[in-house]
Amino acid sequence: MKITLEELRAWVAVVDTGSITAAAEQLEQTSSGISRALSRLESKLQTTLLHRTTRRLALTEEGLVFLDHARQILASVEQAEEHIAQRRDTPAGRLRVNANTPFMLHVIVPLVAEFRQRYPHIQLSLNTDDIVIDLLEQQTDIAIRIGELRDSTLRARVLGSSAIRLLASPAYLQQAGMPQCTEDLAGHQLLGFSQLDAHNVWPVRQPDGEFLRIQPGLCASSGETLRQLALAGQGIVRLSDFVSREDRASGRLVQVLAAETRDMQLPVHAVYYRNQSLSARITCFLDFLREKIQENQLL
Image (cartoon, rainbow, N blue to C red; front, side, top):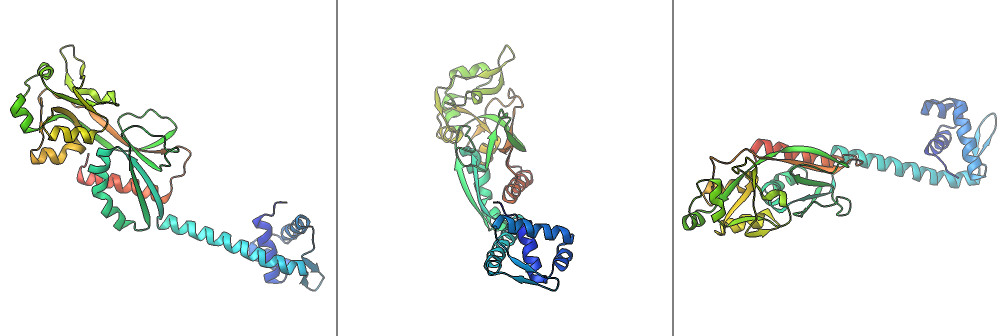
């Protein structure tokens, strides 16, 4: 037995208006359609809800009991519809965002206060991973991915792209010397990634024309850890502009081999599952993030 909302609405409308004809006019249906809906409802319930005469309709005892339940069900559905409409118009609820540590610290975290002020009903849950995660397994709504995408099951929105540079601290360069060409890097301490080997390809050409792939003397899984090592004078590092912007502006890190560095842009995407409807809170977060990235040139 599967009672439909259409049947419940027809039933309540008949009771409220006092006739099948009036109920049909209220619901913009035919009288025969309302009558059939009532017949189906009584058949499914295996009971009589109304005594019908040529002059009036009278509720049976079962009809009186069922009327209260029907009103509660329809009121709950209307309340749920209104609640969803409000959430669409005023985004609300928990939003789970995942990004690698550098992007989270240098791009997202500085924007949190303004986002929360603009959307006070959204509860952010910010998580960091320096490897690619499974969004469903980690219960994530949005993940920020740096570099080329490989997973075709994901939808993606481009947030921009970030250039990469070779950097070192003044203290390290004073002690080890400034390299003058790509070949000079062989005599330096090179900082690289332990898990993301693609990030150990540096934007400088070797004599054969290929980009340099380094074997790091000191490695870490996180770009933020590598940044801290570079700041501590432990060697030369490859970092994205969004990670190093403030360090370069303050002089804590300086660019190495600027003339030899080729333009290498890493695309930045926000990804979510292809079969997931884009809720209001996801849409407003992505719109806000892209707006601020472009406005403040954060990448």
